[in-house]
Image 1 (tube, rainbow, N blue to C red):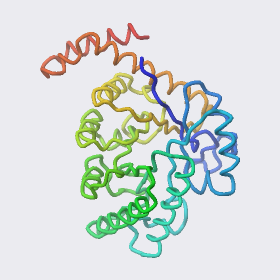
Image 2: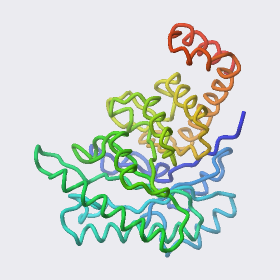
Image 3: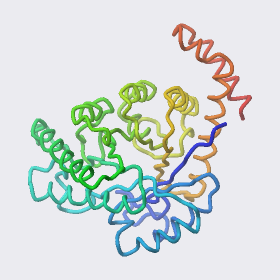
Image 4: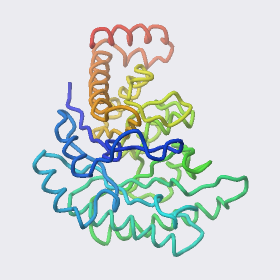
Amino acid sequence: MKKLKMSMGIWGNTNLPDRFNVTGFGRFVPVVDRIKEVGQIEGIDGIELHLPTELDESNADEIEKVMGDYNLQIVQLCGHTWTEKQYKHGALANSDKKVRDAAVVRVNAALDMAARFNVPISVLWPATDGNDFPLQSDYLALYDRYVQSVREILDHLHANNYRTRLCIEPKPFEPRGHIMMGTTAQALCIVNEVNDPNFGINLDIGHSLIAGENVEDQLSLICRYGRLYHTHFNDNDQQCDLDLPPGTVNFIRLVSIMYVLDQAGYDGWFGLDLFPYRDEPRKFIELSRDNLRLAGRVVELLNENGANDLRGCGTSGPEMAVLIRQCIKEAD
C-alpha cells in the first residue's frame, strides 16, 4: 500500500475546554511538547499550527530545532482570525475596514512565516464571518468584502513569489449560527470566481458531514475542478462536529472517501483535526492513523476485485456492499 502522508493539528493535543467546562478536563501542554509528542508517533510526519497562538517569531527557532530532531514538516500554517475580540463579528468579510485589514495582515504574516518553513498550505476558515440572527448580515456585501480580502492576500502571495497555497475550509455552523460559505459547493463557487492557481479547498470531513453532505459527491466535485489542495480527517454522527478519529463512527464511509481520493489521484496530506476532550490525545492520533491505513488497504483490495467496473455501471448497490464487506474482512 502506498504511504499516506499524515499530519496532526497540534491544537488537539493539549487541554481542550468546551462551553460547558471552560477549564477543560486535561492539562495544558506547551506547544513544543505537543510537537515532540507528535514526533514520537510512527507514521505522523507533519504538523499543523496557527499563527500567532502556536507559532510566532518568539518560538520559531525552538520549533524549527524540534522539528529537525523529529524529522517533522509543517504542513499547514493558518493565521488565527477568530480568537480575538476584534473578530467577533467577522474577519476577512467584516464590515469594519480596520478589522478586515487586520485580518489580511494576520493571514499575510502566516504566509511570511510559511515561506521560512516551506509550508505548502495555509487555511482560511471564515469562522466568525456570517450571522446568528435572521437578516443580521448583508450577505451580498459579505461576499464582496471577502473576495476583495482574498485578492489582497493573493497579491501579497504573488508579489513575494510564495509557493504556499490558500484553502477555504467550509463549515456550516459553530461558532456562528451560520458561517458564510457553509457548504462545499458554496466555497467552490468563490474559489472558481477568484480563479487563482494558489487558491483552493481544504475539505474537513466532519464539517461536510454536519452540513448533511454526501462526501463522495463533494470530493468528486472539488476534484473535477482540480481544487482539492488539503484534507482534514475526523468523524461524527452528523449532529455536531465531534472531531472523533476518522472511521470510528462509520468505517464504510471512510472507505468510500478514501476510494474517491484514490480514484482522483489525490497525493496531498491527510490532516488530522481531532478534539480529544476526555481522552488521551495519543490514542486518538494512533487510532486515526490505523483507521486511515486500514481504509487505504481496503481501497486497494476493492480495486483488485472489480470495484471500478461495479461503480461504472451504477446499478450494483448490493454487490458493492458485499464486496466492501469482503474486502474489510480480508484487510483487517
